[in-house]
Amino acid sequence: MSVISEESVRGRSLFKDIAADDEDLQPTEMESLCMNCHHNGTTRLLLTKIPFFREVILSSFSCPDCGWADTEVQSAGQIQEQGVCYTLQVRSKRDLDREVVKADSATTRIPELEFEIPPFTQKGSLSTVEGLLDRAVAGLQQDQPGRRAADPEVADKIDAFIHKLQKLKDVEHAFTVVIEDPSGNSFVENPAAPQKDEALTVSRFRRSVQQDVQLGIRAEGDTDPDPEPAGDDLDTMRNEVLVFNTNCPECNAQASTNMKLVQIPHFKEVVIMATNCDSCGHRTNEVKSGGATEELGTKVTLHITDPSDMTRDLLKSETCSVLIPELDFELGMAALGGKFTTLEGLLKDIKDLIVSKNPFVCGDSTSSDRVQKLMEFGEKLDKIIAGEMDVHIVLDDPVGNSYLQNVYAPDSDPEMTVEKYTRTFEQNEDLGLNDMKTEGYQEGN
Image (cartoon, rainbow, N blue to C red):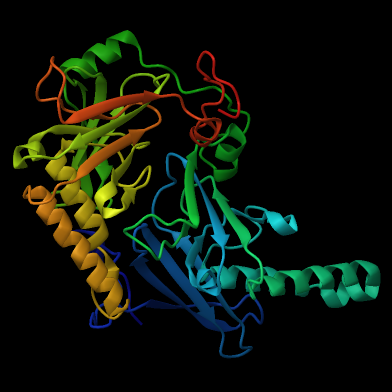
């Protein structure tokens, strides 16, 4: 039986990429009580990473006496700052094979059947779209013998509905699967990565007070908003670097996070937070806007004409999408979080996310075609950084809190355009800003 040692916790990551040649990647086994027959069975835990997502804990239980088995997936990360909603248009049987991480706090809906699985009624799972349908069918069939004896008419109606769910797997007609998770820890695979997935829409939203209470991050009856920082506190943050103790998100060792308010020239004030871990060397930096949400969204487009463009300062907020039209590439909101870096730094971070740190590139966890596709994408990013490709970089931020340095300031930049636009109703809905409509804004714009 393997155990989680102190060395695993301090100084290196518990969560490893799945690879066939990694002999150390073995599940942790422990004896535990079977809740069906009350004899001892075996629980297996595997700590791993989901590509383009985050760390998860996979667990399975099996009992040799009664044969009962169970599986579960739990997020190993913290509750995210925003909830997430995945809307998938299932158009072919290939879409049924997409991997899905469904947290126990997620709601699953199929609008065409007016079917909904409420939050906290199922354990978290790592499955596929087809697996979600099978699990829903199994849940409905579970109590059918009792229903058939007590109320045959209701049982017949549920049988008819089960048949409709099963027919969805034939994909004779397109249907929609919606997974809405206020914790932000659910996930639906994009098999076209790094390209945009035309069948999948991902949106972020602010949790309601009720959802905070359900997740246990707000006390019941506590509806007061977070207090605004006092004036003296803001002055202190502007003049000093604040340091507080945290745990490293990679190895869980004690680390320090530095925080400071910084005024970006010709833009606004932002909060920069940097964490450095002395144990494993992991470093992160995160940027949050220090000002209010802008009335208009901002789209910044830079035509890269010289390698010196790579040194431009860049602020990417959590609500900003990054597009490279020539590569048909789009990095969605919240990916990579908020960053204050250079254009070169952003492109290197994108390469790390999509290629270098992608478990699909190593081992036998993917096809050679996907590996080749990702490696070619990485090579194109290298050419952009070297100034060998003629491309445009687009920062699209509906909240208007992103920025790209104008090296000609205060004059206009001949290779850069900045476009202001009014958010649509759907964008305001995703961002939780429908109570902040701008003058002249109407629903449906």
